[in-house]
Amino acid sequence: MMKMWKLAAMSTVAIGMLATSFTTAYAGTAKTASVSGKTIGFADSTLTNPYFVALQKGVDSEAKKYGLKVINDNANNDDSTQLNQVEDLIQQHVSVILLNPVDSQSLSSAVKAANSAGIPVITLDRSVNSGKVATFIASDSVLAGKMAAQELIKALHGKGTVVELQGILGESAEIDREQGFDKEIATAPGIKVVAKQSANFDRATAMNVMQNILQAHPTINGVFAQNDEMALGALEAIQQAGKKNIKVVGIDGEQEAINDVNKGTMYADIAQQPTEEGVLGIDYAVKLLKGQKIPSKVNSPLHLVTKGSKFKGF
Image (cartoon, rainbow, N blue to C red; front, side, top):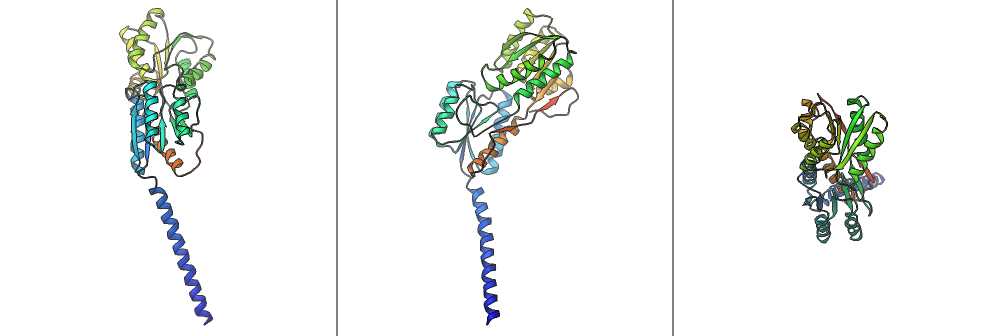
């Protein structure tokens, strides 16, 4: 009789363990499934720049893996438009907002509005000056500026005159890249920055700005452009002016810029990986939706591209 009781007890324990195992497995599946069908809002600054097209591609492709819906907004580099778009996302009660801000100051109010609505915000590539951001995913822009300066110092053997083309003034990537570049270029006393002007991260604007700079400083030796679109615009102005041996260094990793580096028409590029940034944006949004803690900053890798590199751009 005692043996039968023990056998029954063991069977009960085994069934209980099986039930617990099944419940745990089901709970894990349910946790993953609970993410499916939720909506993420992505407020992108512009789609005229290939970098942000690649960023959106990463967001969309990774969202599909989790069964997430994405509302994509394009602000066309207008902060007022983006403010309205974020407000619309809040009204639509999205679960998480991914934000690539046009302007770091003005979009702070949009982040605060999302905070008040209880919607977490993740900033991509650029961040905001105030408001609570769950995490900021970007390459280290200070380091990118520093690396660009190091390449120009190397290219000019520590002597010469250079020009710095700035992005959208007051935007976080512009501030950080300028800081990294200026501090490092100052370590080469033989190099002088003779002109510093904004071209708004835009190719056509950079070409016009560079044409004017070349008239004022016809003997410059190098150009640092805070993104590849401006580097490519500057390169076009340099070629149209018939100038040679002006070393151009950009930041981003656009395939067109990588091609120019390998041809020798552009000296170097500090490549970012925007598609990966978009993927990380979704991955960390999912962590938030699952109630997991995430770091306040996530660094996306940088890659130095020089002639002969096999690095694939976007």
